[in-house]
Image (cartoon, rainbow, N blue to C red; front, side, top):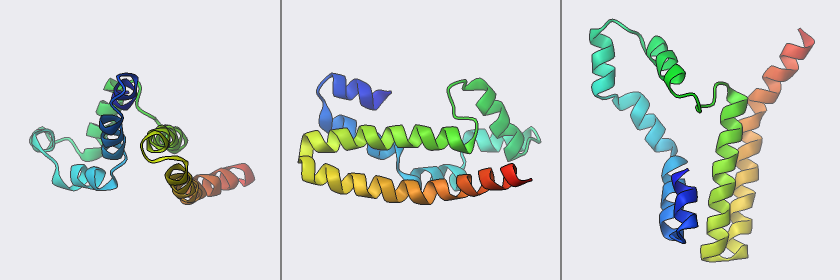
Length: 122
């Protein structure tokens, strides 16, 4: 949402930074491994990570609830970022970015397609 607000204000550099931050896989790993005050509090309260995550999801109604929704959310972010890349760097850079998006999507969707195939067979 913040990235879209930046684009509406014509702050394309800011929008690009927001989209890149949102899509940074290292940030997610840091959150999972590093923890913080909330993790320490949950440990003190005797809650495991799964129950804490479920509580967080219930509080955040707009959070994707399954792999397919998460994939759709991330595709939207990547395509929005691609629009900003095209604006800032031109169509050639956007085309290269689109190739990366399609490659990423093929890799990210493979496990979902496999699980869907198994559920239909079984």
